[in-house]
Length: 258
Image 1 (cartoon, rainbow, N blue to C red):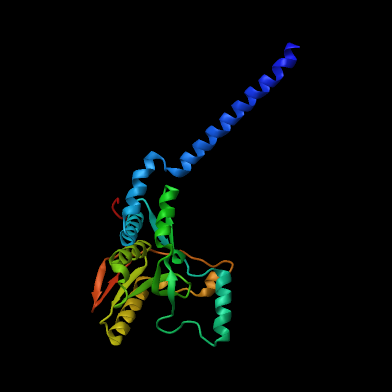
Image 2 (image 1 turned 90 degrees about the horizontal axis):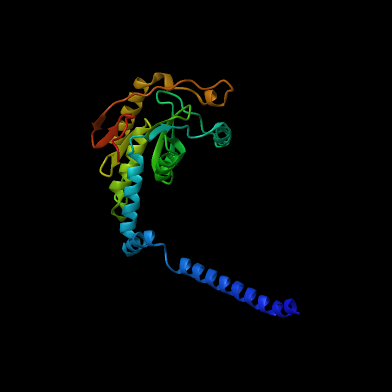
């Protein structure tokens, strides 16, 4: 009799407890969704108060920091793999374009992503990934590569429309640092440069490349052959001025801590 009388009371207490628990859970979830944690709220408010231009500058500063870290190293990579080269060669054959030969046997590729030709390495994975993200979406105007597909020079045209949003200096610095640290020459061509000066500068650049690294004049056959490959050398050097063009030799040097 007592057990039968207590059953509705126990059920009511249990239902009340469950309802209270659910209500408390909903309040906690609502609080998490409606207000960021205290440790992030100040940073979030500051970010929201900045203009679009200032947020872009902040992002470029972070990218510059990522590519100048001392413990991050950069290396160059072939612009195409074996399968891609097979397709590339088929397209050249159909369009009746010959492979590079003569005094300057080099390929010229427009608008190449720096993330395609530069690899990053660091003891800490996040530093390597951050450095690669900083350059992955950035493109060079022209890439010169040898017959093995190895990048040897990046050419950047500094025209009137180059300084979009007033951030050209920061964007160029990120490109130049990553390219040079990967052992690739970096060339800036100013808008006022004449065609004759462009020709002479490119000739000087390629002639210097041949003098510095005659063993790097390999064929794409070495890339697709089963036993292809071969060692590569790094040649350090400073920068030199050619007319109105700034030609940076391949320093491949570490950077100070950012």
